[in-house]
Image (cartoon, rainbow, N blue to C red; front, side, top):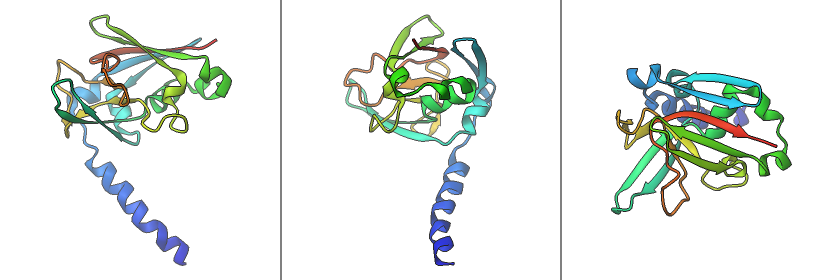
Length: 166
């Protein structure tokens, strides 16, 4: 009985976090395409809001701190293309993820950077910045690579994601 009670605070925290994980009509209807080999899928913002949110604090070149929230990029990829789960650690270490913005800007992230067992602060696909939905200019989805000292791979207005695996 005591073991079951120990999980109650954890369950409460998860429910509270999910309740705070708000949504926005624009972000809910927005989509991002995901490709991996023969798999091609489209995910909506609404579906991403259903994934467990993670936070990343990023300090801009102006010294301003911003807190981004969204699902892990790896979770987004797995939800879109279950075939990605079949990649072993050797395939992940040789893989890359190409992220393309609405304006054609492209950034590439190494496959291992998506793994929370490899990277202390894994990459997220943010839907919130500082507690609010990401604005139309930067969102509704923004790739956030928290450990980068220069934020050239923080792609705003993400349109598509492609897993490039050997």
